[in-house]
Image 1 (cartoon, rainbow, N blue to C red):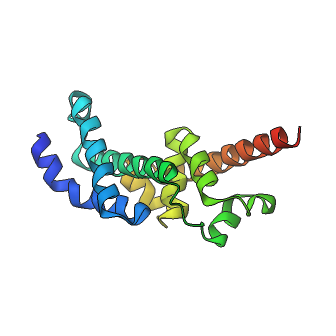
Image 2 (image 1 turned 30 degrees about the vertical axis):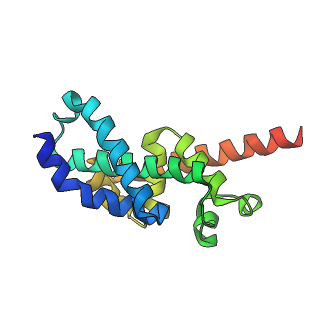
Length: 163
Protein backbone atom coordinates (compact mmCIF):
# COMPACT_ATOMS: atom_id res chain seq x y z
CA UNK A 1 0.00 0.00 0.00
CA UNK A 2 1.29 3.45 -0.77
CA UNK A 3 1.66 6.15 1.86
CA UNK A 4 -0.23 8.87 0.01
CA UNK A 5 -3.28 6.64 -0.42
CA UNK A 6 -3.10 5.67 3.26
CA UNK A 7 -2.95 9.35 4.21
CA UNK A 8 -6.01 10.35 2.16
CA UNK A 9 -8.01 7.30 3.27
CA UNK A 10 -7.40 7.85 7.00
CA UNK A 11 -6.73 11.50 7.78
CA UNK A 12 -10.37 12.51 8.31
CA UNK A 13 -11.13 9.50 10.54
CA UNK A 14 -8.01 10.19 12.57
CA UNK A 15 -8.86 13.88 12.93
CA UNK A 16 -12.36 12.96 14.13
CA UNK A 17 -10.96 10.58 16.76
CA UNK A 18 -8.51 13.19 18.00
CA UNK A 19 -11.14 15.93 18.01
CA UNK A 20 -13.49 13.82 20.17
CA UNK A 21 -10.81 13.73 22.85
CA UNK A 22 -9.34 17.20 22.45
CA UNK A 23 -12.31 19.34 21.38
CA UNK A 24 -9.89 21.52 19.44
CA UNK A 25 -9.34 21.42 15.71
CA UNK A 26 -5.80 22.74 16.09
CA UNK A 27 -4.79 20.12 18.65
CA UNK A 28 -6.51 17.37 16.64
CA UNK A 29 -4.49 18.39 13.58
CA UNK A 30 -1.33 18.28 15.69
CA UNK A 31 -2.12 14.75 16.86
CA UNK A 32 -2.79 13.55 13.30
CA UNK A 33 0.40 15.21 12.05
CA UNK A 34 2.50 13.62 14.79
CA UNK A 35 1.13 10.16 14.03
CA UNK A 36 1.77 10.50 10.31
CA UNK A 37 5.34 11.60 11.03
CA UNK A 38 5.75 8.45 13.12
CA UNK A 39 4.11 6.39 10.36
CA UNK A 40 6.61 7.70 7.81
CA UNK A 41 9.45 6.61 10.05
CA UNK A 42 7.91 3.15 10.46
CA UNK A 43 6.57 2.85 6.91
CA UNK A 44 8.72 -0.14 5.95
CA UNK A 45 6.96 -2.21 8.64
CA UNK A 46 3.54 -0.55 8.43
CA UNK A 47 3.26 -0.96 4.68
CA UNK A 48 3.24 -4.74 5.19
CA UNK A 49 0.01 -4.58 7.20
CA UNK A 50 -3.37 -5.27 5.66
CA UNK A 51 -5.24 -2.00 5.03
CA UNK A 52 -7.69 -2.67 7.85
CA UNK A 53 -4.93 -3.35 10.37
CA UNK A 54 -3.05 -0.28 9.20
CA UNK A 55 -6.16 1.83 9.77
CA UNK A 56 -6.56 0.30 13.23
CA UNK A 57 -2.93 1.11 14.03
CA UNK A 58 -3.34 4.71 12.87
CA UNK A 59 -6.56 5.21 14.85
CA UNK A 60 -5.06 3.79 18.03
CA UNK A 61 -1.87 5.78 17.56
CA UNK A 62 -3.81 9.02 17.14
CA UNK A 63 -5.88 8.23 20.24
CA UNK A 64 -2.73 7.72 22.28
CA UNK A 65 -1.19 10.89 20.86
CA UNK A 66 -4.37 12.85 21.62
CA UNK A 67 -4.33 11.52 25.19
CA UNK A 68 -0.70 12.63 25.53
CA UNK A 69 -1.63 16.10 24.30
CA UNK A 70 -4.65 16.14 26.58
CA UNK A 71 -2.54 15.30 29.60
CA UNK A 72 -0.03 18.02 28.73
CA UNK A 73 -2.74 20.58 28.11
CA UNK A 74 -4.60 19.50 31.27
CA UNK A 75 -7.83 19.88 29.38
CA UNK A 76 -9.37 16.67 30.65
CA UNK A 77 -13.07 16.47 31.30
CA UNK A 78 -14.30 14.13 34.03
CA UNK A 79 -15.02 10.60 32.90
CA UNK A 80 -18.57 9.44 33.20
CA UNK A 81 -19.21 7.92 36.60
CA UNK A 82 -20.61 4.70 35.14
CA UNK A 83 -17.42 4.21 33.12
CA UNK A 84 -15.32 4.48 36.25
CA UNK A 85 -17.59 2.12 38.16
CA UNK A 86 -17.27 -0.44 35.41
CA UNK A 87 -13.62 -1.14 35.97
CA UNK A 88 -12.43 0.55 39.14
CA UNK A 89 -13.03 0.03 42.84
CA UNK A 90 -15.35 2.60 44.43
CA UNK A 91 -12.43 4.21 46.26
CA UNK A 92 -10.97 5.32 42.93
CA UNK A 93 -14.08 7.00 41.56
CA UNK A 94 -13.01 10.40 42.81
CA UNK A 95 -9.77 10.35 40.85
CA UNK A 96 -9.54 12.96 38.10
CA UNK A 97 -10.00 11.66 34.57
CA UNK A 98 -6.48 12.88 33.78
CA UNK A 99 -5.06 10.33 36.26
CA UNK A 100 -7.13 7.49 34.84
CA UNK A 101 -6.07 8.38 31.29
CA UNK A 102 -2.44 8.51 32.42
CA UNK A 103 -2.72 4.96 33.77
CA UNK A 104 -4.56 3.70 30.69
CA UNK A 105 -1.71 4.94 28.52
CA UNK A 106 0.84 3.47 30.96
CA UNK A 107 -0.57 -0.02 30.43
CA UNK A 108 0.92 -2.18 27.70
CA UNK A 109 -0.69 -1.00 24.45
CA UNK A 110 -2.55 -4.25 23.84
CA UNK A 111 -4.45 -3.78 27.13
CA UNK A 112 -4.76 0.00 27.21
CA UNK A 113 -6.10 0.24 23.67
CA UNK A 114 -8.75 -2.43 24.30
CA UNK A 115 -9.89 -0.67 27.51
CA UNK A 116 -10.08 2.66 25.69
CA UNK A 117 -12.07 1.18 22.83
CA UNK A 118 -14.46 -0.60 25.19
CA UNK A 119 -15.04 1.90 27.99
CA UNK A 120 -14.41 5.26 26.40
CA UNK A 121 -15.59 4.67 22.83
CA UNK A 122 -18.25 2.06 23.51
CA UNK A 123 -17.05 -0.68 21.18
CA UNK A 124 -18.07 -4.25 22.03
CA UNK A 125 -15.53 -7.04 22.34
CA UNK A 126 -16.56 -8.46 18.95
CA UNK A 127 -16.06 -5.05 17.29
CA UNK A 128 -12.72 -4.56 19.02
CA UNK A 129 -11.64 -7.97 17.75
CA UNK A 130 -12.60 -7.04 14.20
CA UNK A 131 -10.93 -3.64 14.41
CA UNK A 132 -7.67 -5.03 15.80
CA UNK A 133 -7.71 -8.25 13.81
CA UNK A 134 -7.92 -10.47 16.89
CA UNK A 135 -10.46 -13.06 18.04
CA UNK A 136 -13.39 -11.92 20.21
CA UNK A 137 -12.14 -14.18 23.02
CA UNK A 138 -8.74 -12.50 22.83
CA UNK A 139 -10.37 -9.07 23.10
CA UNK A 140 -12.34 -10.27 26.14
CA UNK A 141 -9.18 -11.67 27.74
CA UNK A 142 -7.35 -8.40 27.16
CA UNK A 143 -10.25 -6.49 28.72
CA UNK A 144 -10.11 -8.69 31.81
CA UNK A 145 -6.33 -8.54 32.12
CA UNK A 146 -6.30 -4.81 31.40
CA UNK A 147 -8.85 -4.16 34.16
CA UNK A 148 -6.74 -6.20 36.56
CA UNK A 149 -3.54 -4.35 35.61
CA UNK A 150 -5.25 -0.96 35.91
CA UNK A 151 -6.63 -1.82 39.34
CA UNK A 152 -3.19 -2.99 40.42
CA UNK A 153 -1.53 0.23 39.22
CA UNK A 154 -4.05 2.33 41.11
CA UNK A 155 -3.84 0.21 44.27
CA UNK A 156 -0.04 0.38 44.20
CA UNK A 157 -0.15 4.14 43.95
CA UNK A 158 -2.70 4.31 46.76
CA UNK A 159 -0.35 2.27 48.97
CA UNK A 160 2.59 4.54 48.09
CA UNK A 161 0.57 7.61 48.99
CA UNK A 162 -0.33 6.14 52.38
CA UNK A 163 3.31 5.25 53.22
